[in-house]
Length: 362
Image (cartoon, rainbow, N blue to C red; front, side, top):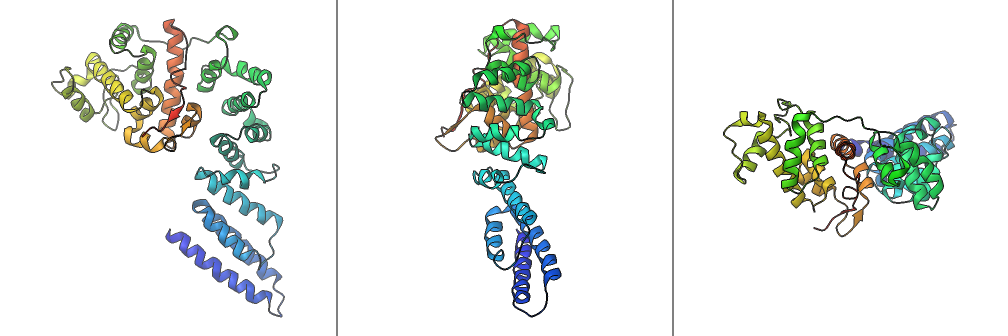
């Protein structure tokens, strides 16, 4: 905030100098050019954190100084990016009017993501096709292009893209399979399960009415099935439990935890980890995506990330906009592993529960 106030003060001083020089008898072209360059840079800096203030300042000085087309576009892009960072729908207006030629890749991505965030599917399709080829070929944009085409009724074109993605064992490959009949693709089996963990996890999943593929996916992501794993943050064992969490869970269940070393016992660690997943499911509307995010980032943060009260959001969009990169990657990886483990275990591959809309019912 202090930086913004300093910049605003400098902007107003520079604008005053411009106003005086414009009405003087001197030839101010070189000075005006330098002032204009400084003003544009300061406006861009302010727009990053406060695009509304940047608009007000820009409107106050634009009458006093000639700006080049390039400078206008720089300011428009900065304001649009500021709104995009704030997930404000006004990003669509500011970024949408920019010419595609010479647009930065970050701006291409920001305006597509803004259109996704606000469900403007015609812009999603239009702006993805306007991306450079190297961006268009990335799985993330192929997937969102297909989602937009489905929404716009271009089913055949969307199906062509989905079939290309479905042969990959990636997150977007897994999501693509969700939109295709099972007989249309052959999901690859590349993920292996250590034999010593299969029966215990199948047993505990059945007793707790949980998808065993989900438990396997959490264990794989957390510890790669290493019962002796210990993280820098102090998490321990197969399900990477913090000792404080494990002690709390043990007190509320009939699971005996004599000391912290017991967390290296895979059966004890697994039992406590599954109890924690059950607890998170109860807290998170019985939604496995919210519970997965809470397992990584904590329930309090997930509550803050929910859509506006009384509204819903498609799960794949909610995941794409999880603010924490680590949690976003964690959730995507768990979904990918879950689908692959469903395939390995011979169960019907279904992401229906995972892709139920995210709601805020608080």
